[in-house]
Image 1 (cartoon, rainbow, N blue to C red):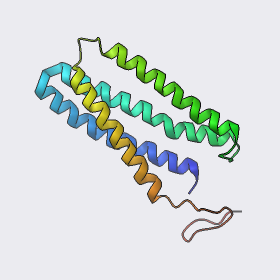
Image 2 (cartoon, rainbow, N blue to C red):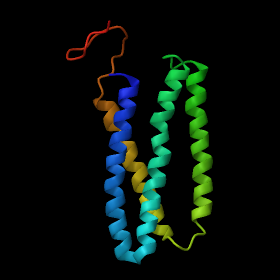
Image 3 (cartoon, one colour):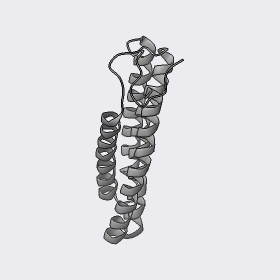
Length: 147
């Protein structure tokens, strides 16, 4: 399994898990505080996935920039630069959304936390189940041989 395949699986699994969280949170938010709760849940799930979805993308970009070497400056600059960007975007979103009256801030917060935790667990499961070899230039049983 390649780095790109693992990152794509993490992105796909993140979409599925975040969609389930968004549906559950929107239903609960609508029951608790009406339209504002539902909007808070949808915005929280979207923000949580958008920020965490950038991690596998930055790893794929960094792997390309580093030409397959995870110890190259290109890999580190892509991953760390994306993390810094995510931090700035998160702070800007929190400060902007904190003043909005059209959404419920508590539902937004709980949905962001649930989305972040679920995405971290999803990434952990995807990476743990991947069959990434510890050494290079080998073929695992069930893999297609390299030419």
